[in-house]
Image (cartoon, rainbow, N blue to C red; front, side, top):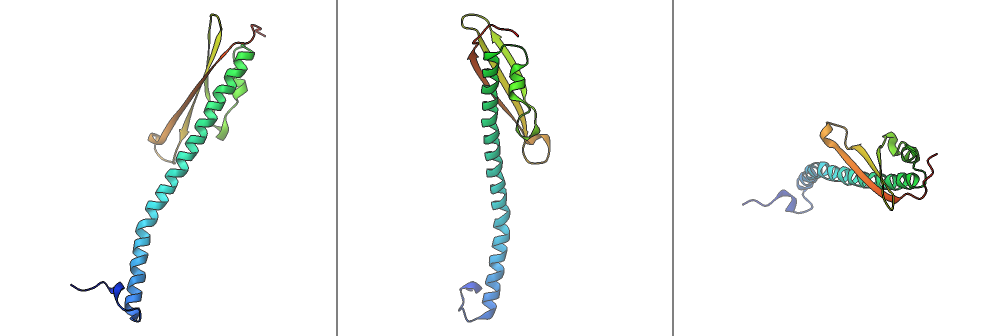
Length: 136
């Protein structure tokens, strides 16, 4: 069995050139995998940040609806959301002591550019007691 050319003496110039070629090929095989891994980590971090923003939007909307139960107050308090993608907001008031208001916020997030199967649906809800009975 013949030894690998990279294990020859360092004075042999042919073996140095072949070792450089081997390292280049190994680098070319590993870089795409590392790049894909890096993109995946960045996308997971982005989705986690948008989930936190969705939870915060639900809490903000519930607080606004608890203080002022007029229709549409929760949607106005939340606004358009980060990234220019609008939220889908639903508000539900439960009668009875205590009166409760629940705000549900939904947002579709597009991951990598590509087909629709890369979309993720983020949802959050928040419930608070209605603080006053004024209606406008």
